[in-house]
Each structure stands twice: as C-alpha cells, then as structure tokens.
Amino acid sequence: MLQVAFIRDHKEDVIKRLAKRNIDATQMIEDAISLDEERKQLQTNLDNTLAESNTLSKEIGMLYKSGKASEANVLKEKTAQFKEDSKALGDKLNAKSEELTQLLYKIPNVPHESVAKGNSEEDNEEIYSEGDIPKLHEGALPHWELAKKYDIIDFELGNKIAGAGFPVYKGKGAKLQRALIAYFLDKNTNAGYTEYQLPLLVNEASCYGTGQLPDKEGQMYHDSRDDLYLIPTAEVPGTNVFRDVLLAETDLPIGITGYTPCFRREAGSYGAHVRGLNRLHQFDKVEIIRVEHPNNSYKAFDGMIAHVKDILAELKLPYRILRLCGGDTGFPAAMTYDFELFSTAQDRWLEISSVSNFESYQANRLRLRFKNSNGKNELAHTLNGSSLALPRVLAGILENYQTEDGINIPEVLIPYTGFDKI
RNA sequence: AGAGAGGUGGCCGAGUGGCUUAAGGCGCACGCUUGGAAAGCGUGUAUACUUCACGGUAUCGAGGGUUCGAAUCCCUUCCUCUCUGCCA
Image (tube, rainbow, N blue to C red):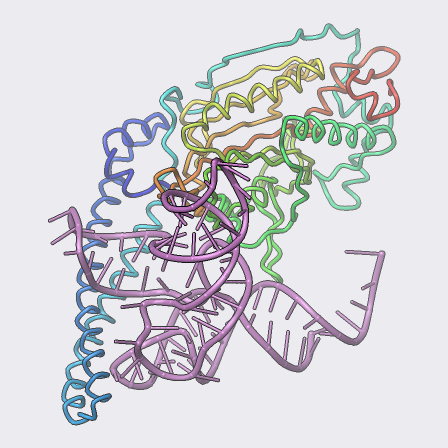
C-alpha cells in the first residue's frame, strides 16, 4: 500500500497519476488525508492522557516505597478517570487506524510517469518486437492437436484424475517441460539470481504481504482445515522471504529465482480461448524476484526486461513487449511490461511473462526496509517477473517448431532434452 | 497426534510486579592505539507514531484480563523447538 505521508505530500500528483488507471481517486485521497489527521489528533490526546497517568503511577510507587500508604491511596482514586479516558481514546484510535488501513488497501499503486492512461488491453503500447513469425506448412495444428498426435500431453487423463485444467504431460512432453525449467533456472542463476525452492502452500499473512488478500481471495485454492493457500505464483512465497526484514544497504541488490507449480482457480473461465494449455488450474513457472535500492529499481527493471529478451531470442520464438496502460497495470504495480509470444497455429498472442516494478508498494505491506546511508530505515523496492511461464512457452514451441514430419526442439534445449525432435 | 520447553532489540541472550530509562555479549559506526592491519581500549548504536524542537507515547509473538503500575501474574490464541507416535 501507499504511505499516507507520501499521499499527503504529493496529493495532486497522486490523483493525477491514478487517473491513468481511469479512476478518480480524489475522494479516496481526501478521505485518507483527513482520516490520518483525525488519527493523529486521537493519538496525541491518548499520549497526553497516558503521560499523566504514568506520572501518577510513579508518584504512587514512590509514596509506597517511602511508607506513605495513605497518601498513595488518595492518589489511586484519581487514576480511575485516566483509565476510563485512555480506554475510550484507545478504542477510537484503533477504529480510526483500521478505517485508514482499509482505505489504503483500496488505493492501487501510482503508475509510473511513462505509463499511458488507458482502460484495458486495447490501450497497451507495443514497445518492442523480435523474431520472424514462421511460415508453417499446410495443415499445421494448434498445440492441443499436436499433443494428441504425438501423445505428449493428455488432457482427458487430467480430467479423470483431477478435472479440467490439470493436464498430464507424458514422455517427451514431460521431458521437454523439465528441460525448459532447467534451462530457465540455469539462465537465471548464471545472471546472478540465487535459486530458491519455496513452499507451495502459504499462510494468510504471506497472502496479505504481496496483496493477493484481500483483493483476490477467489483466485486461490484454500485449505480451510489448516488455513493455508496454494500459491498462485512463486511471487507469494518468494517475496515473503523479505517480509519483516531490515537489510543493510550493502545487501542490495538481491535477486532470487525459483521454480514452482502455480495454482489458480480462474473461476468462470471457459471456452475456446482457454483451450489446451492456454489457461490452467495448475501450471509451472520460473520466477525472478528482485529487491532494489529505490534509486536503482528502474535500471534493474530494464535489466530484467533484457534478461527475458535474451531467453526468448535464444529460444528463437517471435514475441512482442507491451507496456501496459494504467487500467491494465496490476493493482500493486507502478509499471508492468508484458511479453507475448506469437502462437502461429492459433494466430494469436499469448502472455508468457509479466515484469513489474512495485516500487515501495509491496515493501510497505511487507515492512521490507534497509538502513540507508543516513542511518534511516527506508522502504526497499521490489520487482518480479516470469522467466518464464511454462505451458504457453511449451505451446509456442510445439506450434512454431512443427514440421510435416515432427516437432523440432530449439537448439539451446537439446542438451537438456537429449533429443532434437518429437 | 500425545507430552514437555520456549517466543525479548540487526543477531545471541539475561531478566518472576515499581530507578528496566531492557543487563551482558556479538555485529556495526566513530575515535584512541599502529608503519599498516589484527587484537586491545573508549564512545555510540531498536522500531513506530507524535512534536519546529526539548520531549511524549507505544512496542518483549498476538489478543484480552488483574493492578495505581506488567517483559514479569492470569486467560485465549498463533508459532517454534525437544521427545514419543506416524511417515517419503
């Protein structure tokens, strides 16, 4: 969430930039500032009451110590009023603080200056593209047909075992997926990211830390017996590594990477656009997460973009990069670039990576700080991105690399698969 | 799952009702010392809110309670560790 002090000091700018999301935040901003004023007033009153009460208690203690019990008893009677007052003020203060926090949860991050105003994906700007769209042979198939033809992914079997959205990868399909995971992790660790194996179930506090709660409760699988959530992305356990952490400035920057399955309920999504591997309840993803000094976070962001570009170039897959407009940028992000892979056989773009700079929005919820050169604790910036989401990359490889007599394996993956054709 | 122990500052760790204003150590910063370093010595070093400032308030896992006063006593709850059980 945003810091109230920031909202107060940059009121006009915050409203102006939130307008990029096509929301008029004027009322929310005004309310936040006035709630904070009221909170401060209550805090001051409570502090003063407690100060007097504490003084009195000390006097009583001294009187007892010097054997003046009767004088102490007189003072004791005066404490009742203080108790009553501080209780009442404390209750009001808590209510006011809670009201403010709930409001702040509802205010999304302020988009970066370069982000365009816009409503939906229609308004996203394409800022880069690379790779030739292959000319496929007559009768080229979409990946779900290829999966059946070569017997490498079995959707019906997944339906039986779990339900729709839980495909079973078999033989060379399973091996290819494993090869991709290993290749991505190697690329990331070679670029300086530290590999983590993270929990796939997380507690409620972690979900609040990265903002899945309270906003997106319906998206997550939840085990009510132990009150744990299946992770929708490695971002959740990966970013919560840094919850309640105070770093030294010299610890920065930090980069971690992890492979995890991801689980999403995706309620209400049916139809042709979610066919095959396009949208699943369980899928694999390799994630990169960075913790950066605020002065360096956009440079780091560019570095992450370059890193993902490098992977896609090595895989020789055609893709484009979109800078999301305000309305399409995720709630906690200040800027997001989406990578989309062109699926030739489906004739459509598939999102395979989303790289975001959250600036201090997540760090504020997480209480992720570092001690800066002035000795002050300052919120760090967090970033994350996929490198990459597996099923759609797999779909893109199957579709774009198909030939009449089999599917070729991208050259960089052959050392990992041990075969060059399916 | 059963029994027991425990959660204290950046970290470790003492602390059973009032000079706890949280001992001591480690780490870190600065200084002395040194040809330079290490060691040694000295000084400083929690977080949040609030105040122009002095200062004030809160915080010893969390939430309640007892008390004039709680890290300390009571209740509830979460978490961790040890042993036993179960198990890849």
